[in-house]
Image 1 (tube, one colour):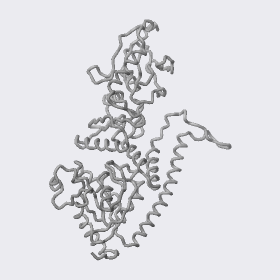
Image 2 (cartoon, rainbow, N blue to C red; image 1 turned 30 degrees about the vertical axis):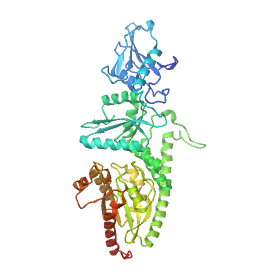
Image 3 (tube, rainbow, N blue to C red; image 1 turned 90 degrees about the vertical axis):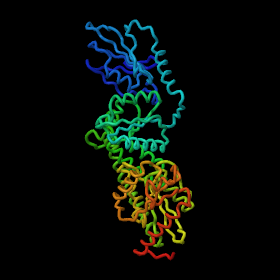
Length: 499
């Protein structure tokens, strides 16, 4: 029996002699971290004690109370045994048991006890102001890689969450020899995370690893918290930041491709008949309709993106007729590409200290000190484990890079992982068949290093080290870029511009 806090019976469930199946609780509160507002009272017909499965239900469904009535061989009740959650943070564990009592001899008020439990949880999070309009997340990473790499990857997930305006309440890293194919992480660690969610009033779990449909289903079976993975987070950032029609089309296509294999058929009540007059058979279920609609929408988006790609090609053709060489800025997200473009061309495109601040490609004219004119193009940043569907969707934008005479690879030298980030960019450029284009590496953000001499120790004396916010540091870069462009112009059909 599921009993609401008001005393109203919400649901009666009949199980077998060995188990009951509790459905998804629809009466829970909107707040992700508080108790659900219902208590469970059930029988153990064989005289068993409260089981581990009972305690898991108490925790993962965030029940107000879990009560079990032992039944004697004569069919009459022996005693009622009750457990409730603890706010954690001490040696008492995650739950505690009340003294057993006969169901007919209960004197204590369940409402008062539940109010006291909730007050204890509220006291744990009293110092934090909760904005109910923002997602409040616990970040989870389960890694088989070395600890340093795992920590760097989790730190990047934190940056991604902050870029999507998610409040990061806590982050959890578990290193395992082998990933749990069902729950990703161990059941004990998931138990700890659920207690943290209650303490911190979280409503979202973000996993650093891409979750397959069955893993998402398994985790949500244990918890009523929303569960997303790194790919969904990146897609959501792109959905917020895309401004152009093309960018929005690309993001929608990537989201639909991600969603298609993850459509769930669990809710059979959502099935419906759609056969009209003359239709044979039961028609299509809602799941089949959703799949067909997504496939139809993907086909339309592909056609629209093809048109956009042709328009972009025509624009590039006009640019080629003007005999203007093209410099394209590439690099890891948040390496400083947009800031560099703003400084070089006196522009004011959006440049924030956030991952993926720029999605839509931007082009500006740049005049070198010798009066040679070029087109300078800013592109979307790359990132480790960039979702394949997203990369495919943005192919139309990245085609711009194939028209470049020089790729300027901007590197954030202040980031401890800058070498790994460089490798990610190099690998993606190779994947895009851009390995034949000349690349000039530009080590940015020396202003964030403790000592400018640190840069030469990291990348050598001959490397181009700059600060994109300081125009004076860009002189050597401009000279080198002009030399490379000049050589390339001389060996192609470009008009030689006198220096």
